[in-house]
Image (cartoon, rainbow, N blue to C red):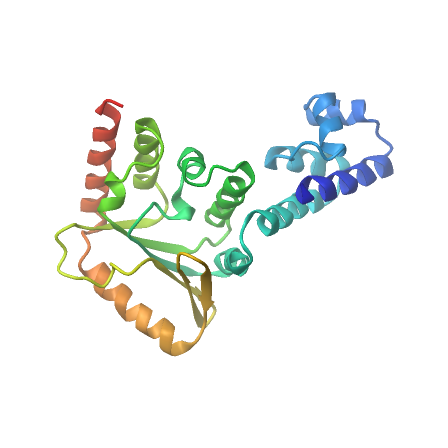
Amino acid sequence: MRVAGLFASEMRRAREKAGLTREQLAEAVAFSVSLIEKVESGNKQPSEQFANAVDTVLKTDGLLSRLRKGLLQHDAVPPWFRPWPDIEDQASEIRWYEPLVVPGLMQTKAYAMALLGDDNTVEARIERQRVFARDAPPEVVIVLDEAVLHRQIGDNQTMHEQLVSLAESPACVQILPTGADTYLGVDGSFVLARVDDRVLAYVETPATGLVLDDNDTTARLGRRWDELRGESLPQRQSRKMILEVAEQWKTRSN
């Protein structure tokens, strides 16, 4: 509850400095008094919309929203992953190969919840998708193994909604078909992010994750990425396949 506790104390301090009662703040932000009380007592996790509204009314220049985001990411993700969202925020280009599940930057809330099962962790993952709302969002290209489209995460409706969302995402998504003439992707996912003139990589094992920035490793992963993408279907054909499988999930009986 670290996010809720620290947010609560800072919000209460800002409200009192503004000279507002809880009732007055509730009216101004169009949320209930009971919600204000729960957040200020540290018993309720603030939503993004709530933090933005309170920031606006209390004229805190986005402090509470930034505090919420930073603490949420810190508390809800394992230590080895914590540097990576900041890298995503700064990246001009992200290249992602994923053989098992839809990448986190593309996941719907229902799909992420089926995978993670924890509200805070899911919210931290969804927060990362704000990179697409930046003034200059990164160019994101994803190579996704065809098996991901058929691997059930959650119920049929979750899969249908996830694949439709994937097809309509701002990223370039290309499918590596089952019959592709390469075995380079069988040993796991990896991500490459370009930040200024550097390329950094993120790879995972069953026990941990690693952020890598040595040139030899990122160059090898870059060559692997090029081969995997070369074996993938073009974007338009990939989108067609994704939507076809989405329709299959929609009409499939549970």
